[in-house]
Image 1: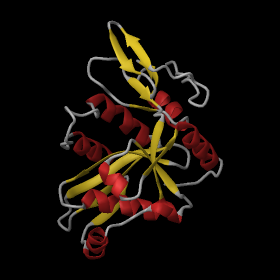
Image 2 (image 1 turned 45 degrees about the vertical axis):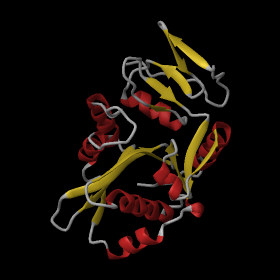
Image 3 (image 1 turned 135 degrees about the vertical axis):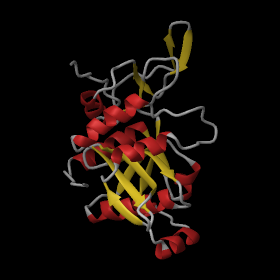
Length: 230
């Protein structure tokens, strides 16, 4: 199976628009179209700041956004109400106990303004294989009754956690799972995480956007630290 040699985002000439057939697509964030979704290609992509994002009716796009959203832990803002919920919560949190179940739950979560989900059955299958190889990870939130009520998953891109998606059934479960993960990563020397694209929820927690060039420099510097996040 051929492993893709993705263009280097630090030197790639990103066009404003990319033509596919009769259609034009915004190209300033896209490294390539149509490369196969495999464990090998995911490993290569994430190590180089690239991630896939399924879109209907076009070959799979692989992204390295011009503006990258990150959460620097020094800027983390925990609202008073969430901090209170964290103190009194009876949820239990685990790591890598139910990766595929978390992905499936994320795929079924309603997201305002989105038609369906990018987490297809193929994504679940291939990311689960990446998890079995130790590169993709999940955090689970469990109720006192032992029910999975929230969580998140993402990829360790070499000492930097790249968050992919979150879900909750019980209020605040996904947010508390994220705080649990941040605490764990800070204990292991991490100072930030990649969240790819800004959302209102992450902005409220202190996330910021940086340029592609700054992100790639930050990624390379952190990778050289050889952190063991999991």
